[in-house]
Image 1: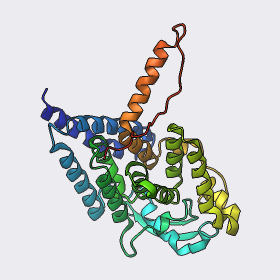
Image 2: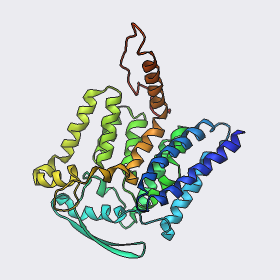
Image 3: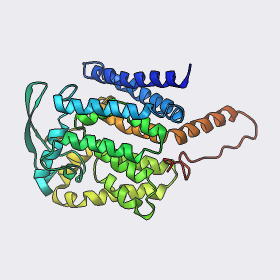
Image 4: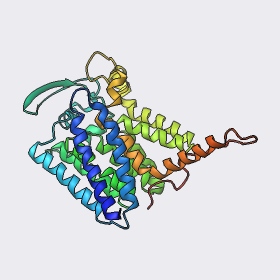
Length: 325
């Protein structure tokens, strides 16, 4: 089977994620996000390996996936999976009262009107990263495009993050694309002394990005930087803790958008579509260091029973194990 045939099969596999994404909207089928994640890694790795022999495959994937996303925004088709394009901009009206007062907003989803009254459950900067008067879906879609631009020199990451279910979620206005853009800037671009400001930006947006940064530093055995990440997150929240510590606890830490201060069950997080954007991003961006880690782990486990075999801990991400620039 030739490289072009492989590429065609991978493109078909990429668009199979759209059908699976639609499947996740049916009761009892949210688990389909797991095979979507797996196919994303397959597409990224497969097209990444064939980028030299089939240079048109990834640009075609980006064009088709981006086109599908634009059509979704303009027509409403395959749209309406989230209230985030309405709630995220609405929180900006609260100012310093982000976690002290709820905001009310109404929207139309699949022809049904909805009315919500919700507290902000994200970190403080996310709601202010928007363009006034512009539908937030375009902001999310632009953030997806910006991420692709930063990943353009890494064939695996570029193809993986172009897998169509991802731009389709951006077209639905999921607010995760702004933090992922910031993560890509902070962790993959050689910014030198400006890396910390970029990392601080990522830490002020959404809690899942903070988890990614902590795990990244722990994997590299940069323990002081992992601690610094936690300290910086606390510093970002400090003014809001002073104004309303209970509100920060209930809405940012516990994650309750209402007034009951009750956490969601763990099952809420396991198969939540947009939460899987983060492991999908990490898997394609850091595919090779992760693969090398498991390869070394397999060799060590295979030799662990041999007499005199000494185990030596290794870093998951060694220096230089970022996107190739």
